Image 1 (tube, rainbow over the protein chains, first blue to last red):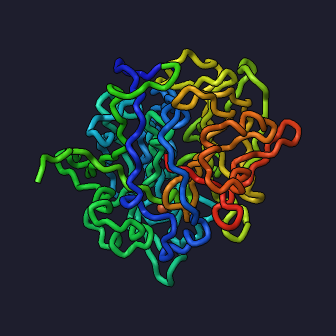
Image 2 (image 1 turned 120 degrees about the vertical axis):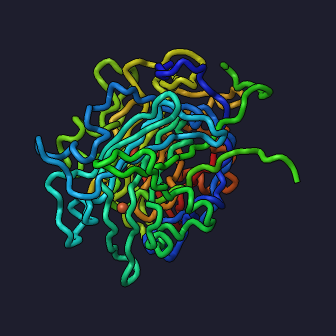
Image 3 (image 1 turned 90 degrees about the vertical axis):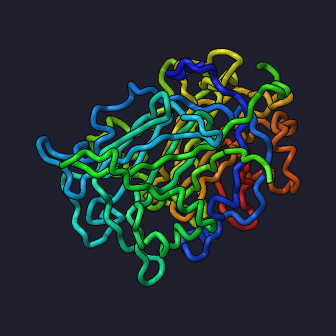
Length: 250
Length: 204
Ligand SMILES: [Fe+3]
């Protein structure tokens, strides 16, 4: 058994079923890339086995000092990234509302001009020599996390003739079981491009879209330094094992 | 009316997009100096117990073209069938094997390579043994929610024949979509996102 980095007894119950109506469907033709990349046959459903219930643990020891600071983690000494300085913070919770400690969060984004540091991104906005665009952190005991970055710019992308992505930060979340694995995107409160985006539009429920929009959080700003946005992330919850037949070997 | 169950909803998934490498394998796409190495790029060391194998996985779209911008993560038991996880209650797994790996597909060929070990057998919920398998999670541009499936091994015919998950596949012609072909120490596995050979994906 790996160390959990927590004093809690490990949880071993099966995960709540995923609500596939709440998530975007695989086939969302307004987002053209999904057309040939979406499975069309029915998924095979079964209750979690150990292969889905278990998952690796990432210790805080793997983190470097600047991993959660995108303003500085790629910048030359003494320099910093260009753009609106922001703090993004929140909690990783499960569907029961419990904080998820020890969750690995990895995030990536375009720079303040909307340009990614990637050889396939040819947008004419310039690269910022002091901005790489990636960072990571691990949640604390209550599931809390925070990082510093600059607000990413919106950018045009080849889909329709004039489609623009709203400003967003990509998030990869690693909870405790491999079946909780999730990638999503965080949007910014008040951005009018959110409601025009074909990728966002793949989510049919307005409340589900709202769950991806971070709120401006004036109480958490650092005066004269950075604005703050609060973004909570929810992972699949676990069933209680109290009255379950325990799998062999438990 | 009744009381509220007060449950939260899982955060909706969004595509990893075309630049997933910046976040998950930055060294691979030329962003050096932020992390020492890409997480999950090395799975075994000289002390790891078990048979060394290589997985060569491609993900193919509805036209049969390999994706060159996919990212695959794998999760597996150690050589004795134990997971290196706090939820593993049967005993300690091999301390030299985390059991988790992450690789981008090659930008020219679309092949994802994993150097790992062959996993042991893990019990199903009722205690029967499942055949040796590796759990896959696949993301890419155009994939709105990460795809879950398993890789089984072509040289485990007897175990595969009694595997309780493979047994649930109604259309038996689709079972081979989950079985990787052994070629020496390498297992070759094509994931078809669509079409006649569409891989069986999981909701579990
Ligand atoms: Fe993006």
